[in-house]
Length: 143
Ligand SMILES: [Zn+2]
View 1 (cartoon, rainbow, N blue to C red):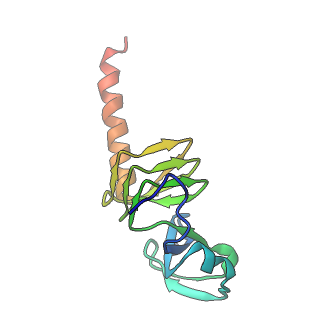
View 2 (tube, rainbow, N blue to C red):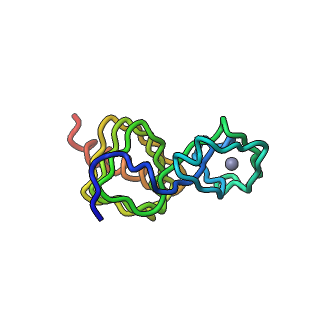
View 3 (cartoon, rainbow, N blue to C red):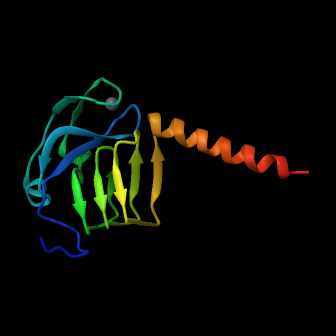
């Protein structure tokens, strides 16, 4: 498959909203291509949230697309990215807001430029552990 470092505009992506209780982007269970999403109407849809376990009702204005599954040689710019469950190879993320709550993703030969990282759940626990380890390694050298 020939692909370039352009934004892939033809594959299906997950429709997500931000969980009102946690701020994490959660999948509504519906997917769409960017083209079909643009022209579709969604009003008062609800789904069981995978993060807070509550039911959320959403409308089109709350929703956005999140790339899921396998991605190769893609350039994501100004997007919300959820790494969980994803497989990204030779991708470039530019000015994206990157969310992760677990470690079940594959990320190879990819680069981040001006991205913000948001850690939740298990990923946040590991991040805090890593930070405290690096602090405790640095501390003994202090006077
Ligand atoms: Zn929720």
